Length: 511
Ligand code: NDP
Image (cartoon, rainbow, N blue to C red; front, side, top):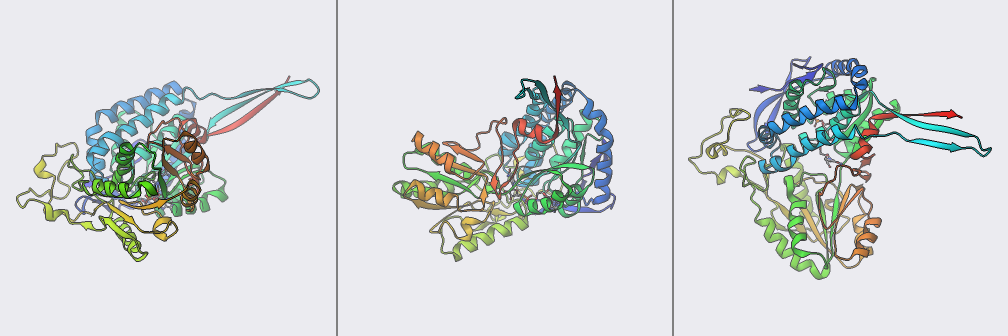
């Protein structure tokens, strides 16, 4: 069985413990590869390598970093199909999504920051004192040192590279940890880094669990900044360790995003987009809108059309190009989502569609060829007969729409992070703003209206870091990305991320 390895000091290495963890394929429920069960010894080696590489890497010109990062871009593009397939197997997401979104976005992340580093400028200030004397102030930005990057399982390579690319482009060296649940494309990336001749130690990838590897990165004395994306509870734990060490922190955390639909919206566009914003990636995107508020005159029409469209989504083998909704990432997460569906029923919700898991093996043709565990090599073509395993025990949930719940019940306050949405009617702008803002989270909000004044009014009133109006997940990598309240601290994207990985120094010269 394939053994994933750590990437430390430019080499692929086994974990100090010699121990490995099982890596499951969500589509089948089977173990298909092994992940290093690394610990603080591996993190120490990675931090040593990163510290040793820092003086040389931080002194390279932005143009030199551009050249290397663009080599990586070319290699990821070359291997796009292999990476997409690996992401689909590892995470359970439809391969069509991995092909169209996840891997192209990893390419975009490296390309964007390869070029951005060449455009980062520093400010200068012409200072005029009250006595007429003058001074010039200018601000230097130096790479902060060794950065720790920790990412989640939902968009594995996409979010991993969203941190690594700006850190490296800014001149930092990195100790990174992908989620132990989805380590495969990070492992593949480490091989591409070797091929791209990224200098040893610039990027180090340590695989393993959050409590062992993640917390060792956070607590390491040589790691000056932590860029983390994941759950709010984990973010709090990281802040508890890093804040007293006075480390720089960027925390991108959970969400419970409202999707607010007014009766004057462009109905067809709203409907198609709302299906996507609810159930893309099995609803496992931090930006998915899980609380759908519909203006009362439109409510019944929306309910019937939405439920019809959602019921028609094809839940299936992640590797089947026709699949709309794949497998839930892990058994543990599957159980969590199912427990929330039970909670919604207990809280008086009515399940309009879904509400149950699916045994995909029951739908499989008897003659279908079994896919032996771990037997399909990465990069191999996927014949249709190999797509399905009659003995499948994957984790599938039918997309679920629930109505009849109050805006302040637990189902509507807590993050479920799965293919489950609630729909609720509202009458006035003030009322729906109150509902939208009633959660502890504030990552993103979606708004559908053709009324321009209302759109601006609502955008200003919504407590969230991102507001999509008449669209969803329309990304421009230059824009600030992040949440308010319990959804995080700091912003990623654009120059914000490059600045995060640098330390400012002001120089004042009296003339
Ligand atoms: P977790 O918080 O469980 O894990 C995120 C990462 O942190 C993983 O690599 C995990 O390791 C690691 N980790 C776990 N415990 C610690 C610790 N004590 N110290 C350091 N690192 C640790 O999140 P999930 O992976 O479950 O991801 C889902 C969450 O991520 C959702 O809440 C979602 O909203 C949020 N998210 C936020 C986004 C945003 O931009 N705001 C974007 C995407 C997701 P391991 O898994 O290996 O144990």
